[in-house]
Every structure is written in structure tokens, then in C-alpha cells.
Image (cartoon, rainbow, N blue to C red; front, side, top):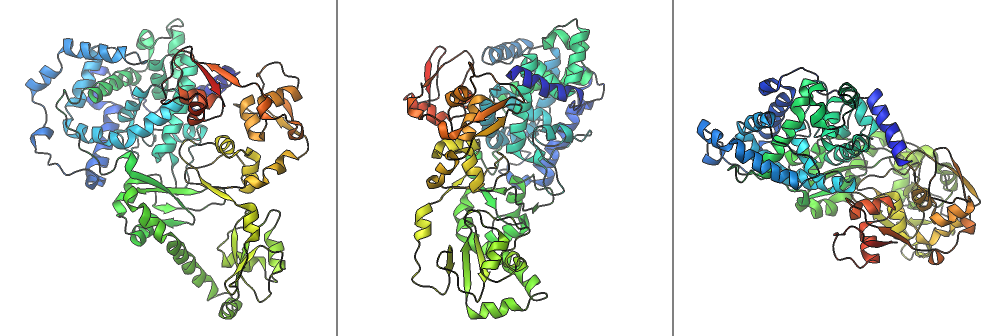
Length: 612
């Protein structure tokens, strides 16, 4: 089933959205004029010299470490026997098939001629490579493929090819949409290091499920799957990259040798006497912050005294520096971690200032009753309860919906459970309403004591099903509590968790779930807070196989206790990782380690793991 689904996804890529980033017919002998060389040269100059030179430790380009290699030094470094030996060692230690030939040598020579750039690229790897490795492990993509981003963009998230491909991983617009990379007037997800890396890993995994050859995956990533399929057909059905090489476009024949050359330099930079120029930030020195209202990087820089250049460097996805706001999505920024406490300590004042500026513009020209109400001091904060609407709340306090929207800077009538709304009203609230008043000194908090909401801040790699499992609630519970229309969540998003209300979903009536593309039985079970065995029993299923469009009965009122279920046992197969197994069963690595008393992420073939 999974193979079939992946084939359909890749078929769409093959037929409709080939990534034809490089289309010029260049010979391997003329690497300097190739599209790869063009992107590399432009990207490094834009990133390391023209725009962000302050984001690297200052080391004079004239210093000995950063001078160019002499011809004699290059000849020694390009010794065939030395290169062949080192690349053979790389091949032994990687699932990628590394080979040495004269094409690879040409590209090693090309990159070594740009020694002054290499130190900064290697240094920038301290920022980006940990992000790549974490994501690639999740999708079981060889970690060595992180070096592909150097070929694609020289690690410049703002890199743009002549064909219009953008970002670290050089996604074309339509291909990016296939992997949830959205582009608007203000935000380009292709430039986001985290989102684009997730998309690149998914794309490479999809291609590998078709070709089963990582070199062919790179070729398809470069030329488009359609061209690779034609090359396979023209070669008589061969499915090894090196065997179909003569049938590939000229630029793609450059691509894999260029990747091998970059991998070699990144692996042996010390032996090549290349000294990294450390960037201003490393991955562990960056924090992600959710922004509640639309603003811009310059305003944030001025208010929190964070250098504007730092914000610009760490947030390339905001193409006009503007951070929009949306009811369906929370936008985040990344800041140097050393400013984290400074941000949180001034956060409330920052948002109050933003709202005050907007309120003044509206209130002085449109409304006359707000100042009068403010002078009375009767400011009420209403906490939204389940089932309430903006019109109902307005009627309760004898104000209008427009008033509430203006006082709280709301752009629509959508509100969520637990939200606090500022109300200026001369009408006292009823005893049963969930409100707080600035005039009341002896106010009880019985309503909040009953709910005890938890606020969960979404971290990198988390899913809605994983968060639901963590708190012992269902996906539907979380979606209801937070007014979510889909399972999509973003890093930094705050989710309300109310364990005391989770039983409400279990008392619901029988539901029918229609299986969608990519869904599994374990994922559906997690979504509804039931077990796989429950669903199989309700639908008389003899196995875990399901098909797209299949209708499944979900009956939470009849689910059996999870304690009586037979615990799942997974036998580790060759090539599997703990993160891959956790993803397969919709659980977490920590949960599996805890269930099996594992102290590290190391597992071995044949090992039996309890799946919580």
C-alpha cells in the first residue's frame, strides 16, 4: 500500500512537476560555465561578502590560511592515488555509492580554486548541518546527503538560480507546493531552513522508494524524474546511475560528480589545510519564538534591542521583513538564544504597544463611547468557554460584535476556548460567566481550577498525534480545544491541552472515517484516541492493510481498555533506526527507549522492541 501511494506521489512529480533547475547543455570539461558553478559563485558572494559579512568571525582574506592554493599545491592535493584511496574509504562508510573518476577530480579542482569561500561554507555547516541531520534521520535519508545543499546553494537560503529555483534546497515554485512549501507576498517557505529541509528529505525519500539508488535520487532531484525515466528506458532498463550516465543530460552528468567532490572536501578539509570561519551562530544558540500579531523585523529589533542584521540573517523566509498574522497559522521568528529572556520579559509590553498604536488610530476617529467606558474603570476580561460565539458574548454584555473586535484587534469573528477578551461594559457580568474584572479584588478562580488547562509549545519534529499520545488525549480533543481545522501545526505554536475534558470525545456517537492517501491504521487509531485492535474488531479486519477511500467504523464508546491489548513487538530490520520505527508506529523515540530501558538510540538487527 505504501509503495503504491509513494508511486502515485512520484508519478505526479514525474509527469507534472519535474524539477528542471538546470537545463543548459554543458560539458564536464567546462565546469566553470555550468549552472552549478553559476549558482555557487553567486550564492557565496551574496551570502558571505555582499550581504552578511558581519555574521562571520573577522579573519582577513589576506591571511595565510585563506590565500589561494598555488599550482604546485593543487597538483599535490589532486594526486589520483590519494583521491581514489580517500573516496574509497568514504564509500565504505556510506550507503551512497561514492566513486572516483576524472569528472570528480575536475570538480574537486574547481572547488579548491575557491578556497577563500570554502572556510566560510564549512563554518556555516555548524549552523545548518545539525538541522539537516535531524530531519534526514527522521526520513531515513543518508546523512551524507546534507552536503547536497552546498552544491545547490552554497548554504545560502536566499540563493536563486536562473531558472527560478530558490533556497537552500533550490525548490521550484510548483514542486515546493507539493511538499507544503507555500509562497506569499510576505513569506517564502522555500527560504526557511527548517521547512525546506523537511521538504527536501521527503522528496528524496519519495524518489528513493521509486529508484532504490541514492545516486539516481540525486540525478532525479536535479533533472526531474521524467528525464531520469527516459534515460533508464534508453539504457535498456538499467537502474544504476553509473550505468545510465551516457543517457543523462549534460548538466546532470555534472551533478553527482560535483556532489562527490563537495562530500570529499567536507570530509577531508583538515587534511586540505582549509580552516573553517565560524559563523556568528550555531544551531544550539538559536531559539524559536511565536509572534502573535503582524509586525516586522525592524520593529522587533528596535524594541528588544536585537541587532537587525541578526534577525535578517536568521529569518530569510520573511522576504519583505514583514511577519504577517493569520487565524489558521502562527508565524515564528528565530533569535539568538542570548536574547531569549530579554524577549519574554518585554513580550507583554511589546504586544500592548502594538495594540495601543492600532487602537489609537481607530478609536480617535470612529468611536466615542470607548473613552467614556474606560473612564469608569469597568474593564472586564471574559474567558471564552466551549460553545460560545462572539455575538453571544456581545449580547451578554450589551455591546456590539464590532466593539469586541475593535477592543481586541480581531480581524474576524473566530474565537477559541480559553481566549481572554477585553470588554468595556457598564453591565455587570452574571455569576456564572467566566470573567475577571479590574475592579474586583476578591475574585474566585473556581472555573479555572476545574479546567487546569496546559499550554503545550510545539517543538521541532512534533506531530499532533504524538502530542495527543503524550497527554493521553485524542487528536480530535486537541483540534476542538484549539479550533484547528487540520492536523497541521507549526514550531512555536501554543496548544491548549485540557485533560479533564478528554472524556467528551469518548462519549460521542459512532463515526465513519474515510481513509485518505498516506494514512495508516495506527495513525487513524491515534487520531481518534482508540487502539488498532479496536478498529480491526469494529470493521472485521484480519490485517493492518487499508485502502484509499475505505470506510472505517470508529466507535469510541465501545473501545476496550488499552491495558488488555496485546503489546506490539517490533523486530529490528537491517537499515532501520529508532526514529524511523517511532515514526512508523506514531510514537516517539523517548517512549520506545523508556518501554525498552534503552540508554541510547543504538539498536541492532533482530532486536525485539516493545512498542508503547
